[in-house]
Image (tube, one colour):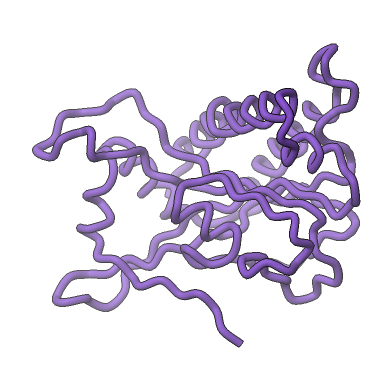
Length: 235
């Protein structure tokens, strides 16, 4: 059995990719430890998000995007310094499950984490792109978990970035820098022919608008609400 594994990067190489203020936020978040209050607050945010999208969003929407069979999971970045690479400290980046709005088929095993680049979560985080999977477990990226008996019919992994207004000039051109990712939101379902799959996977004009609007909301307002909460917590 083979598994994708990505080489570790040095801390300096990682930090040179991102805006300084965005990186400060992510470093704080990556140092947080899970606790029951944090988990519950984030889970409540996921449940509220599902509730909002379980309603028709407008006259053009005949059916809501989500329902009680929609599963949402929030994976948050964690950093661990490891042994040196060519004399420099290396950074091991993982995504840890912090919150989970479950459905009957959900795997309740915790703790759960993915390495950067591993599985849908790790790929979405590493490439900073939204990943969709409707292979029902047959793709090389989809990973069945211990205790999981059924693959998702459809699942998406959406990276969240620490977008800040304080972009300061650096010696390096700011055009080369970007906002650092701090989490990945997974939205999926085990139900066949779901509205979630039809509206996010479809190629028609309506589906494209719905998909773009949904992703914009997740990476905009929802991401901002999550990071505002996380940055308020003490390490």
